[in-house]
Image (cartoon, rainbow, N blue to C red; front, side, top):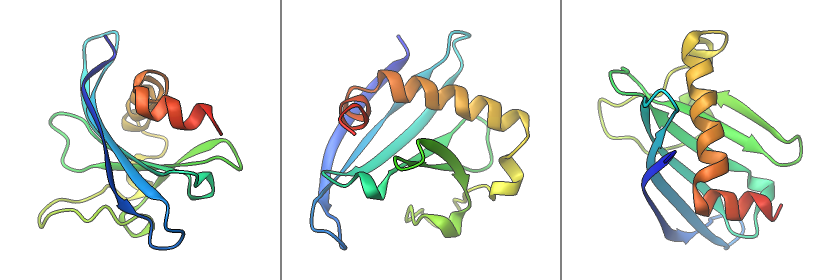
Length: 129
């Protein structure tokens, strides 16, 4: 079971296009039973906005923020300034340079693969675009 406790909710309207914004949250599980918590966010009828993912591994000191761009069919690790997750005080997102070419990057992309393929709401959105 690669995704546990998944929930998808409509969060409101996108400020630039007026379409509904959705969020899916859950726990992704790899074959070795390691887990990561995640949030995925996208805008209905808005593939130009891409999808945003926020992932945290147990024991990690910060979140990893990743964007998916449909026009280039690619994931990209981004820094906190590149996407506003509206984190609580004391929480932080790793800088891109802290993640790229590290073992953390390999783990994050393994979890992204599980989320991309097995979160029903995420799969439903990206498979249409």
